[in-house]
Image 1 (cartoon, rainbow, N blue to C red):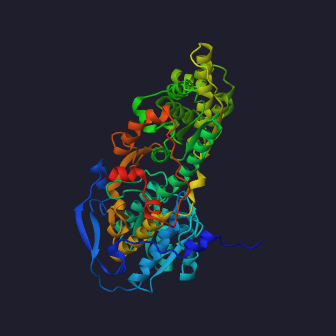
Image 2 (spheres, one colour):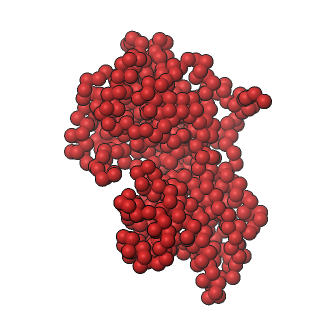
Image 3 (spheres, rainbow, N blue to C red):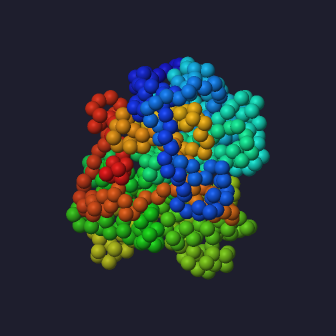
Length: 551
């Protein structure tokens, strides 16, 4: 059978994303207002020295007006890092915005992410090409990649390729690392008087690229709604069968925004928040004890089932486990083997291999099947791949052990059967919901307006997102204002600071105010699948997280 479009694909192909009112007549019909200069919250002196040409730039807001006609120019665009719903609409908005500036403008899509810039591997977009990808999920229009642009030789190669093709500007669609690279690239070209402007667009389903001017990264809204549908389905099943505890790990290695939003959407019996665990200094055993206490209390009400959400990066937020991982990384990088650690029978043997007494005890506390994941799965740098650790299975085994102890002591008389799940790739390439379709298109269009104004070192910004697209505010924020200095691979590096769950923020505090009731009772909410057509309150709602934050 030949490839065909689904009925939904055909219907969505004709959807025209909404734009902020100021951009409705084209990127050439706006005026630019510069606000206050923006500075990073941390490491200001160091960052000013590293970014003398792009530091302390003003916030930019677009208003109704008009700009002078300008000569046609070429722009290159890449998708960088993991996929997120709406990436195709960013490119479509960028394309349409550039054409509104000058119909002769051209957009080149470099294939496979940053590597495509270095290989000079690209496609020139046309109306026909772009139209096939409007309002669709995925990054398959040009593919993505994780190559980092960090070395001057890379910058020079990219500049040479851009000069060869007549490219005057680059748009990098990516997360915090990708836009850090964009900022470094913009600074390098400005310092060398290379006539290439660089603008970024904020992407990541993890939700950890945000601040006052970047209210959410694109893809977070759609991905969390996809996961919430699945979680709701499992809650309905749990409440029907009444015999399983479902441990569900969701994406979000560096922050727990996805887990928190899904909890607010679905009201599970329990949701672990990594940032809270780190603040409280809990051990993994103590985390398991918290789950065990909920299981025991529910069993007393004859409720031997439930749903528990676990953020992907929880291991790195447990202080003892973070220390263990650091020690393992160091020892594995300096000659010790995975087999030696797996063959050690006790803490004494582990200490002989180089682990501290505390880390040896932590390693022994981990179920044997999971220990392999701590030492066998390593990245090209020799580091443990934390995202591959099946923390949901680990916690199941630890809870089982604690329940057995309580049962023997007469403190628990329930039944415990478990199912484990990991929701990750299911949400990354979903067709964008109406919010992300509109938001992404607006981000791309705004990036075009920034380039039309000759700006570099900026991140496209569309804010006031809870007030409807008519009232969205389009503009740009200097990337240097989001940066700090972090220690990575033994070196101090400027990077965009990840936004973690704020424990004093309204989303987390709303969760805290309700979680005891959710644990004791079945307060499940069933969001259902994403709706593209129908009432605005069903189809165009933003995440609960951003609603609470904006309130």
